[in-house]
Amino acid sequence: MHHYEQATKETIFTYRGDSSGEVYLYLCGKFLETAQTRIPMKRCHRVWKASVRLPVGMYPYHFEVDGRHVPDSGGTIKVRQTTSKTGRWSLAIVPRWVSMEELAKA
Image 1 (cartoon, one colour):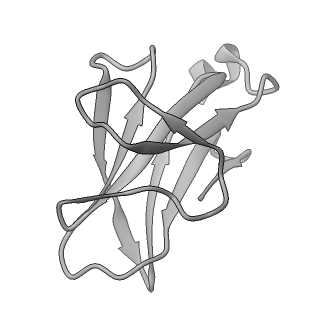
Image 2 (cartoon, rainbow, N blue to C red; image 1 turned 30 degrees about the horizontal axis):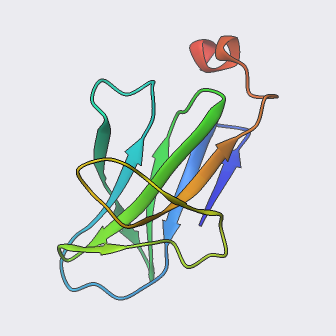
């Protein structure tokens, strides 16, 4: 699951599930230096979270939970991504009202 936090101008990704180890967010997009970015998520009570500043666009993502690929079960759009990591990905959409200028100022 994800949402945009207007105060911080970040997209907040949330994984609600059990993990005895580590949880990562995998993101794809043109703004990234590589085709994919693996971002460690932090546990906050029973929820894992990662905050990312993203420019306007659409970003395929999924979670890695204890080494396993886990798509977002939050009812988001599912896409097939053609990268080294195959399978179903969820799609985060950052709306047009978040401008590049706003991200640069933050």
